[in-house]
Amino acid sequence: MESAQGIEAVSLANKKIILGVTGGIAAYKAAELCRLLIRAGADVRVVMTAAAQQFVTPLTFQALSGKPVPTSLWEAASGDGMEHIHLSRGADLLLVAPASADFLARLTHGRADDLLSALCLARACPLAVAPAMNREMWAAAPTRRNLEQLRADGVSLLGPATGEQACGETGLGRMLEPADLLAALPALLDAGPLAGKRVVITAGPTYEPIDPVRGLTNLSSGKMGYAVAQAATEAGATVCLVSGPTCLASPAGVTRIDVQSAADMRRAVLAALPADVFIAVAAVADYRVDAAAAQKLKKSAAGLTLQLVATPDILAEVAALPDAPFCVGFAAETGQLAEHAEAKRRKKKLPLLVGNLAQDTLGQDTAELVLFDDRGEHRLPRADKLVQARHLISHLVNLLN
Ligand code: CTP
Image (cartoon, rainbow, N blue to C red):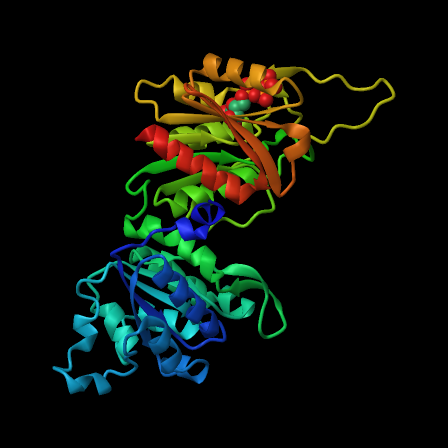
């Protein structure tokens, strides 16, 4: 049960993927990625650059994929010499992981002087790249320019992540972990139970200013909302995550829009519609300061009284739209969970509401949830938030069907 809800739940059955491996220390992680792709049911063909072979041998990938690993435009001349054309025909995705700074530069300019770059230029399928490089190389102006061009050319960027690098430095540029890359692929491949569905998710707290340096907020970490965004992506949905201030990295493949206040969040959500599903995980502030001060407030012995006014209820507004998506609400309570949760579900006319006890959940990595729908209550005993998010998405898929 547990494994069926884990990353093993990602299905890439019948999907033909070409995995391009370029020269970087993360090439060793591409071996694990290859294994995960095959385990998810994909038909994988690996192509390596000359530089990649300085890190891992073609034999490793041949053993993992069970297929020969082409490495050169010229050795391919053993057939009709058109390997750079044939390989991508019939493929569903060309994924270059890791994609070095040099490879991205060559890709940007349409170079075709080795098998993998020629394959990218001659491809007849979508292309995704998982950059991996030193943080300074990632931040360098030429790399920035190249990435902008690649995005404009329709190439999907997966990552990079931030953290410790092989060179000993710490920063942005690490390749995403193989499991995170795998999680992003169903959405790119139109695979999974939510394939073709657009899902908008809110996450984190909101921040309502009092003056330019102070504000009202809450203890939401955003972990649950980000986990739901990852789980929906794994299920194949195109996900737009509207996030209040958090310290979290976006799940791979998710489009994230950062906002501060409830009013900003409402605007961003309405702009992200139409959608098939709206999941409101954010702990939206119920009140904001009526007239936030333009200048920093000075303290006074007389104390301070703030006039608060209600913020817009984003979920209620979206649920009441004529073409409302399937709406899922969250309710964090400190007691009488079932009573409050059912009352909120009825009031906002939601097909599904997720209840939890705030004091047991806020900021933590695990949560105990109860799902409320027309059929009753479904308890999800305490588990990691990503595991819970996957349960929630599979429950939602059942309701949608
Ligand atoms: N929500 C929203 N916009 C708001 C307030 C809440 O979209 N302005 C959403 C939350 O994301 C969550 C659900 O509505 O999905 C929570 O419902 P709500 O009744 O507003 O919960 P609380 O704000 O916790 O209500 P209360 O403080 O009365 O318990």
